[in-house]
Amino acid sequence: MKDPIRIGVIGGSGVYQMEALTDIEEVVLDTPFGAPSDAYIVGKVGGQRVAFLARHGCGHRINPSRVNYRANVYGFKQLGVEYLIGVSACGSLRENIAPGHIVIPDQLFDRTHARKLSFFDDPDAGTAGLVVHVGVADPFCPTLSDICHAAVMETGAPVHKGGNFITVEGPRFSTKAESRVFRTWGMDIIGMTTTPEAQLAREAEMSYAVMAHVTDYDVWHANETPVTVEMVIQTLLSNTAVAKQAVLNAIRGLETAGASPQAEALRDAIITNRDVAPAEVVERLDLLVGKYFHQA
Image (cartoon, rainbow, N blue to C red):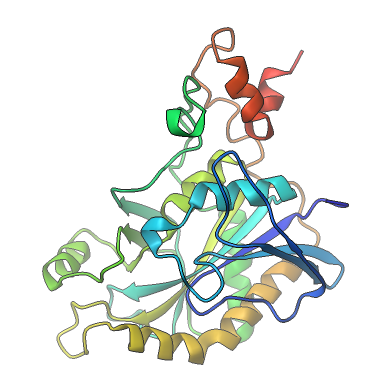
């Protein structure tokens, strides 16, 4: 690419494009982890270059379990992205978080079971022998989350700062028993895609935050109809303009941002002895770990 692209946006259900981008070009990438969900749409917002990717592919043709999260995040890294904003649909597990509201979560709980959660030590991806234990005590970047919260506030939409976001495998919706249990665990919202996006972004040393758009009350609410695809789509369509405006506000809020606060997340995370780390794996993942192996 001619210039690094510091800001990336992953559009979820209902957000498949960014009409505000100018000087658009499509960028098709390959990664060590296979192909991303679709072409990256690269353009400008004001004077800033931005890369957009539809998480589920154009036309929403990839279900949550089959999204190649590693390729998606790695592709953003190839483009130079430091700040990555995820836009996701979610269900509410709390009375006060109503459909139409937006949540900027600060915690994440993983209930998935069929996903590749790391770039590292995976023989199928050619990365065996390099072990990394990245810290995700705070899985969302506080700096970017603050910017996203302010961006939603600017739209006037109801927004909640903080909250526990549980990611379930999908593609089915919850049973009532599951939904009730998640509430007793202290979960606030539920979705299907934030894991492993957040963890992979941290391994890629990117700042990552989510604008979670509430479409329903999941299935726990006695006075509400259980969630359906029709319900989700109707709410998303009514909120699409708000979602896109909030993203534009966040991009503008990043105009003077410095380097990502997560830019050295792997500095103390690589546990494999540098002398025994497979050279071919280090080379394969040079984009992620090269700077830690080539230092004098």
